[in-house]
Each structure stands twice: as structure tokens, then as C-alpha cells.
Length: 199
Ligand SMILES: CC(C)(COP(=O)(O)OP(=O)(O)OC[C@H]1O[C@@H](n2cnc3c(N)ncnc32)[C@H](O)[C@@H]1OP(=O)(O)O)[C@@H](O)C(=O)NCCC(=O)NCCS
Image 1 (cartoon, rainbow, N blue to C red):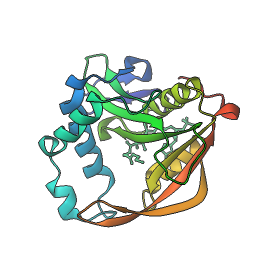
Image 2: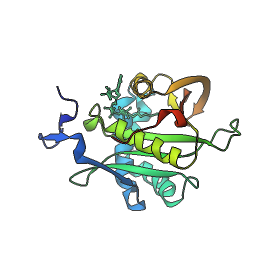
Image 3: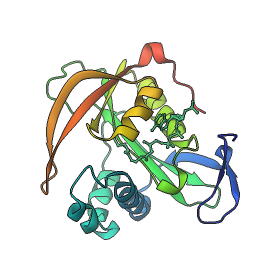
Image 4: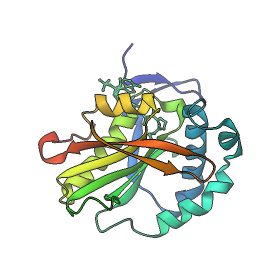
């Protein structure tokens, strides 16, 4: 099947990858982003994090955090992007900026902090589109290396990142989510050599 075509889960119609666009996130996108975040977690993480935690997630509960993030720039080069259907529905988002790792002293290391898509649009080429655009923005901002952290057991996302050219760099850490603690592993991508393309 042509991967650029997919059946839209809600409309039942065929939607092409070109019918999604990417724009900068606005503070008024916070609720839509919180909704995608919750739907994505609840579809991607069963079996990986406690089910009681997933069941407790609500867009309303996540709203404040996203309002705060969207109200303040992440770093001089940072930002948040949303993936929007041609009907103006937000179905994904990504955020990026300077690396938050204490042990990275090089100021030219950027980080992709979040990348979440609504499950109705997984495996249609749009995660790649959003990741490439984030990486492109980091490269344009002067970063020569990008990192990201991903849950060690999140095989779907790790396989995606590896397919996209990212490589595990051997660093891991315990991430305290308050309700549970999980291991995150770090991936890296050389920006100068990757020449990311915006699909
Ligand atoms: C991870 C995620 C962003 C991937 O987005 P996506 O839109 O499904 O991925 P795409 O369809 O753009 O895939 C891009 C390429 O990666 C490949 N790919 C995607 N997922 C893959 C997987 N699990 N295993 C192997 N390859 C994969 C695709 O085949 C495609 O290859 P191609 O360019 O050669 O055709 C999406 O699944 C998601 O939102 N997951 C839940 C949230 C999450 O875990 N986020 C990461 C938090 S760190």
C-alpha cells in the first residue's frame, strides 16, 4: 500500500500526507495538545507504565502544563510545532530547544523534548515530517548535535528514531514521573551530517 495514503480513522476517507501541515504552536492550542498527549500516552504506553497512571490522565489535568510551556519560549532557538489536518484539527505536536542535560556543556547541543501523535495518524509518514521539521529548526538555530530521551521500553518510538537515523549514545537515567519511576535512554543525531529534509 502506498504509505503516503491512509484511511482517516474519524472521517473514513482517504487522507494523503500532503494534507497535513505544520505550524508553530500558539497558546490557544494548549487544550488540543493536551488531548493528543493523553490519547497518545493511553495508546502507546499500556504494559510499559502502570495502567492506573494511564487511566488517571485527562486533557484537563495536562492543560496547565501545556499552557505554561506555550506561554514561555523554551530557549532562544526553541519552540513547539503542531501537526494540523486540512480541517484544522491538531493531531500531533513536537517541542525542541537547548539540551536540558546538566552534563552537556556544549551550548550547541539541542534537544527534541516531545513528539506525540494522535494514534489515528500513526504510521502515515507524519511523525517523520514533524521530527524532520524540529531537527531542521535546531540545525538552523546553530546546533550541531541533537539529543532526545525515550522510555527504554518504548520499542515503537525507539524503532522509529533508529529508522530516522538517530542512534543510542549509551546514556540512561531514571525518570521520576511521581506516580512511577522508569528508565529513559538517550539518542543522538549529528545535525551537520544529517542534512534533514522537510517532507
Ligand atoms: C513514535 C511516533 C511519533 C512515530 O510517528 P509515525 O507517524 O507513526 O511514524 P512515521 O509513519 O512518520 O514513520 C517514519 C518512518 O519510520 C518508520 N517507522 C515508524 N514506526 C516504526 C516502528 N515502530 N518500527 C520500525 N519503523 C518504524 C516508518 O516505516 C517510516 O519509514 P519510511 O520513511 O521508510 O516509510 C508515533 O508512533 C507516536 O506518536 N507514538 C506515541 C508517542 C511516543 O511514543 N512518542 C515518543 C516519545 S519519546
